[in-house]
Image (cartoon, rainbow, N blue to C red; front, side, top):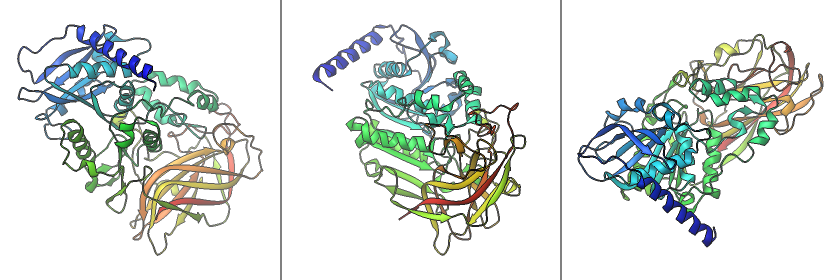
Length: 530
């Protein structure tokens, strides 16, 4: 940044701060632990609704800001649980803010809200209050995490650090499509929880158009320059995107972020971060680690507790499923791995993919019912799918040594189809000694996008092709009587939109037809821990 540009940014920051402070704000006539009717002024003269929770003893405190589109009043019960989660009412102030245009902040609605600027104004207003020590950190999951990146990019002077949970920066093609396949259940859930604008994506007829549209709208983090702790789970629907954002923070953000960005990845799904129960499995040894890490991070950066051990935390910390332990690494992408090729043995398999009889979604990286979805989330038993004649099943014995998978497994298939397109939905499972086939991760690709989502290729019936399904990242050890199992089907519905087999990108029940797929051979390319 040039000296002139730096000076302009400084002058702009001062001007905005003065504008905010010039608006009359109510001072506390006496110490008020809870204020459920706060109005935080914005630079355009509008106000956003907020709840403020202060420690019982008067003083100046660091503040944790939570910006939500899901109604700030939902936090009121949690705010009374001192000592649970990230709630420490003795040492921190908390401000929970309704997004502009949502719930208590509906009167401030604008056509094109700038949530980053709103976050800036909230941070600077908080820092100016009599109960603030001038340090503000942000926390929150999903949409509440994404808005933290927006806020950080505006560089409010008093923003000390951020903890975005299950959130990547910006919007990418992969948030809506996977190799040309529309993420039907996910997008419908987003609409149900209040993001109606995403309904327009259902009208996109060519997924490549969205790929081009969003080419430069994600992982734009050059102006982020505060310490960041990212938290996610191996069962989250966007773990791969979040890992990409983490690497972008280290590659292209400001020097403070590059030096002080960490990521924690537990055995958790989107709506159950830090919980023991995940789908049909439990991980009690990882329970609560997300909150412990967040509080240690806040204490280090906002309370100056430099001897609390945070300085020794690794850049990357991930839970290795079935080992019951965290694996630490100084590498941004996790520990070192070596690729191992595993053949999917057996004769050619023939399956019929009939859109009228789809293979159902049973668990996985979904938003669960608390997030407006009708699907189960996390690991669930896939045994009932393995009994279907439209599912090809491949079982792999790990051998004498445990198979320690860490990263994205690729499934490569050589196939032919009787129609003008095909979908291959892969599910990778951990077969337990009791026979349960528990889903680890799943993914999908289409024959017409076999060389990537950037361009559709013709598919001729009876012609042999090769396609690769890149599964989301996983960290699991297969051993001690377990088996690795891969299921291949023509659908995973309603998680992914069905294939009409006509060559069209989007599904139309009036023109859709069944197709017969022949899988001639296949292999897995597996990253295993060194």
